[in-house]
Length: 80
Image (cartoon, rainbow, N blue to C red; front, side, top):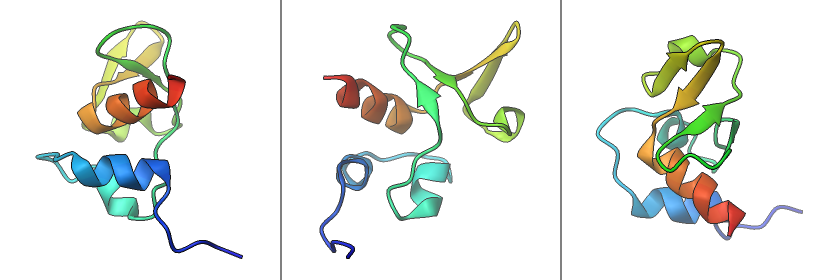
């Protein structure tokens, strides 16, 4: 049975504004892209297969980093 109450991701993304049409808001179901917090203050490591297609993806070496303020806020908050 599914709950009609918003999950943590939906609650957090609803409070943040993004100037781009990002995945977090397009999905509308609180499902966020896969990313990992490795301790960098302003980036997460992007774990999505289509990293190159994301406007927030920054390639460095063989890794892609997420610079989405919404995704970073959710990722950092979930580690607390």
